[in-house]
Length: 71
Image (cartoon, rainbow, N blue to C red):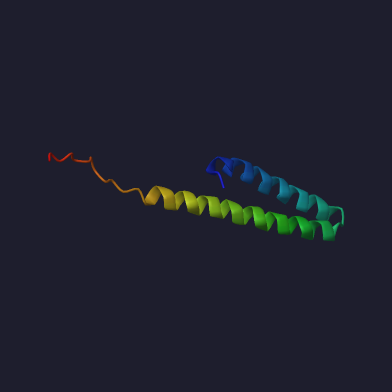
């Protein structure tokens, strides 16, 4: 997943949290449960994006400049 989508994932998790609260207030427990599944999936994706970003930045290796050898 594109790390640039992290902000969008955060917005989605906030929206889902608000929708879950609203569904519970209105007594729509089935709806709240379905939204909870979606929230868990979005949270996993967010964690995955963060972990992938951490791995990519921590594994940068400096190989130095190439040397051209004379025949």
